[in-house]
Image (cartoon, rainbow, N blue to C red; front, side, top):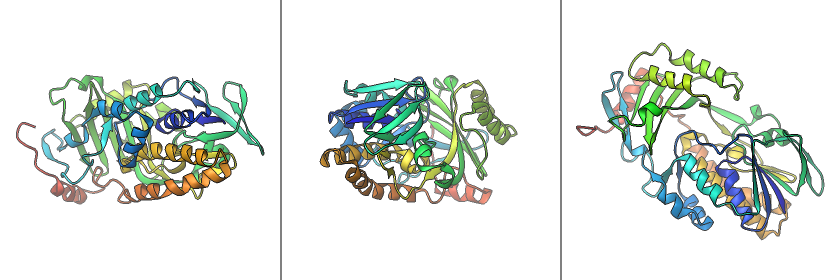
Length: 371
């Protein structure tokens, strides 16, 4: 079949690999001019490890493995260590932590020749017919496909065009998160330590992995009205929230925000939909069922969902009307589990009150001397 995939993140690239290897002619369009290279590391865990093995990329993923989460230390306003996460909180020993850009590169390198990856292109309109889907692109081009798959993230354009505005589908979890590059911290003395400073309703931290460092800012808030593509508006929100906190390295992180032309900023939210498919269009990954970064399972859900969808199309000989519900039936239990794991809304990272911070700190384990 001729299949369009919108989005070249983990979900879209996984679809390209899984569908292309089964002989489908896949076109992947990505709005950005390159594969996403910013953001925090991600986890490949659970059934996604077996999926990666089936895709033939598990050894490459293991070869790019990093270990960041286990080095998270909470610090006070002077940078002195308060404690680290308990051993029973965080990644399983079987989980594989990897830089997002490394995983996307591995997936892109694994795309078969039958897959066409088009950067700086996006879907502008979708019209479904009985036997095809007609698509207009932002470039002005138009093309018809047998199926269209939305793998374009929490703010999915495909979902908006086919299922309606996201306001009725998004569930805000009370937090916002920003990530910025901090090249000046990559060679810091405590290179393997990732300090996190929190005060009521806020967190500022620095995470180091490979040869880079990122600054992280999180804060509690009710939904904020802003343009998610307006970087300067996002920066203004962060200045308003953190400018008056002149302790530790908070201002240094804000300086990095000012200098970074492409920060990541978004709400910590989930997507809840009664169905992930309509006609010849289906959604995969965060576009269908974002569990939020707090779940730590978005990457794995993207990979398993892509595999399930490709398998069901193969088993039904391309009958999307049968394949889409079967894909959803297999994937939904994983999604419901992942979404249920974050009901507390990140109180461990961003305690809402001083009393909650004190209670959180009691759970931390002491940091060994010299760390």
